[in-house]
Image 1 (tube, rainbow, N blue to C red):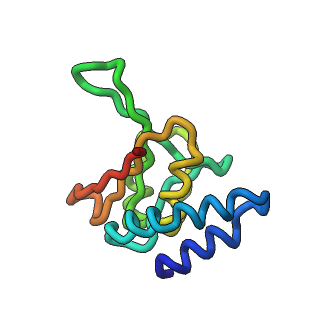
Image 2: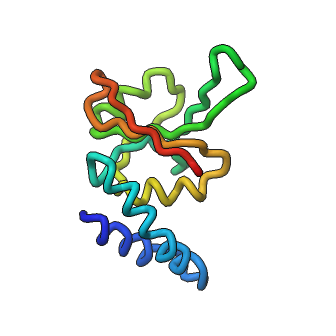
Length: 132
């Protein structure tokens, strides 16, 4: 799905509350610009049984009080599922368009970044997109 179709899908499936579709249209150029720098049109995220995305809290080694909350986005379902080694709950890998992931950054409280893994996890070539 190309970026224009991804944006249109966001608009089509947005709550018809009189605000959200307009917000999506307003930020669509920024979503498209960022998504165009990513290597894939969609990524796989881990989702818990309750439907929420799996988030990870990272702590600074030298300053343990400094934390960041991130979501990992993987290039393949296998990479996403391989990353769940230490999770205690059941999760599944879901595929989402890149613009949808970026749009959700606005909606998830306290989310600092999404780390996009372009290649297989073994090669560890992440790109990070954080909130401005």
